[in-house]
Image 1 (spheres, rainbow, N blue to C red):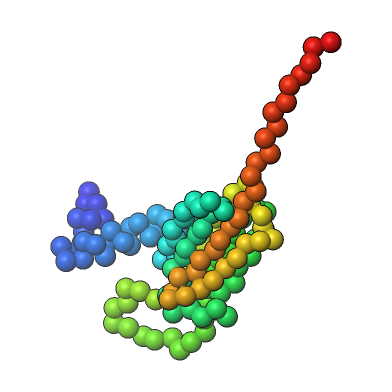
Image 2: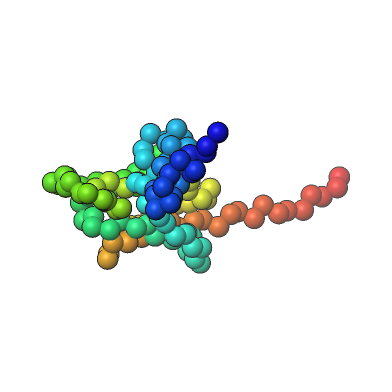
Length: 137
């Protein structure tokens, strides 16, 4: 029996790989995987900084919400739907969700967008050091 890869012409190998992987991933989420925007995360002295790719989106197109200890970023824009003979990218809608650090100060999260990069600065509180001595009676 031929595998899905063997059924494809050689020049369509990567198209087949993409199709097979997309079909495997799709049940994990109702939103197509290609809408999951890439992100970078770094630790800073003040907390955590997250950068997300939001190419072509204006500040008004982006919505950020925090619920149940998770940040959800959604960006979408209305526009004319183009018909292509081949389309390898499209950015009418992107999203990303990630958990907040346990000691994040949610009320002080700051967001900026510039040059297609959304930056979130998530401050954290230092954990209380709860060390003490117990006297013996």
